[in-house]
Structures are given as structure tokens and as C-alpha cells.
Amino acid sequence: MNSPINQDPLLRAFEIVSRPEVTPEQAEVNRSKGRDLRQARAAQHGILPIALSTWNLWRRKGRAPAPSVVINDIPMWKLSDIHNFFGISANTSAQK
Image 1 (cartoon, helix red, strand yellow):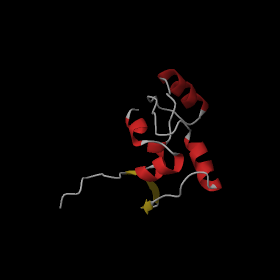
Image 2 (tube, helix red, strand yellow):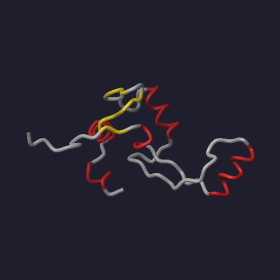
Image 3 (cartoon, one colour):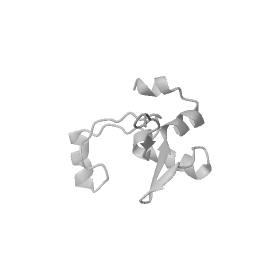
Image 4 (cartoon, rainbow, N blue to C red):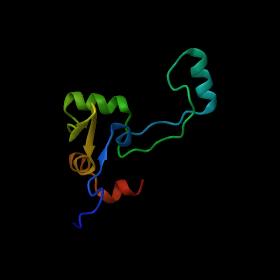
């Protein structure tokens, strides 16, 4: 069998969207005020330059594709479905 592995990988929502950087200073302030984002993290650049909340809103309103599969209650999308729905070329997202 000569099929390539991960020819059309499945993505979770956090792999599709982008997340801003949280500096150690911001994380400390958040911890002291009882807010979310209590740990420092690097910025994540997903396929789309939108936040997770926007992605979830788009899903509810039908502006984003439905998940391809749901595994253990986790929605997942095929990379090709994201590219086709938003008109993204595979070369563009591979450069990020």
C-alpha cells in the first residue's frame, strides 16, 4: 500500500486559529486578578488570523465549515476542507 501518511491531516480548532503572546508580566497580572491566561506563552500563528472565539462564532453562524469528524467529543477538520472553504492555497499556509 503506497498511500502517503497524513495526506489530508485532521486539525483541531486551536491549530486553525491564531493566539496572541502572553508575556510573563501579563500572566502575573492575570494570576493576581484571577483572570484566564495565567501562564506565559508564545504567539501561535494558525491558518487563519482570527481568535478561537471568532472561529466558534463563525461555526455557529455557518460561516465556517462543519467539522469533518468528531473524535471523543473533539471536533476536527480536514486541512483540505479549511483550504477549500476559505479559498486558501496549500502553499500559502505551508509558508507560515
